[in-house]
Length: 121
Image (tube, rainbow, N blue to C red; front, side, top):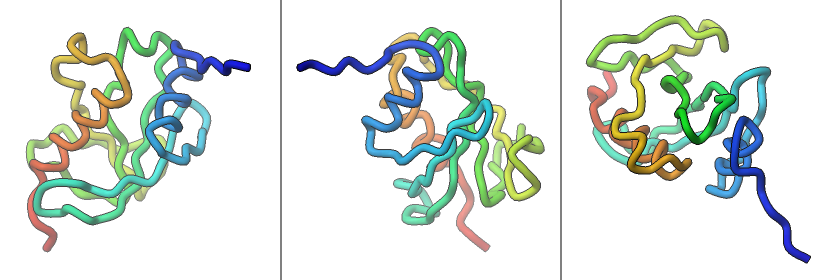
């Protein structure tokens, strides 16, 4: 018996995150999961990531990550998040999305964003 995962819309996005090894908690219109920063001055630090579930996934990526705890991205464009006071929204669209419209491509985008952080105080 063959199982096929949904490939499009929110269900496809959730399935892609799960197949990448993330335990995802759906909170309304968001996928929330634990993430360990892999590169940069904060490598090894654990955070939570919230991604808006995109209706036309994978044609469009999430608009930008919601991050908890608040880390203040050094390039600005940090806004309040609807996920709560301990969260911040980084308005950072995924660069070069048409080249790799996958969860793997979006995770590469996250690695790039986290590599640009300042060292912890």
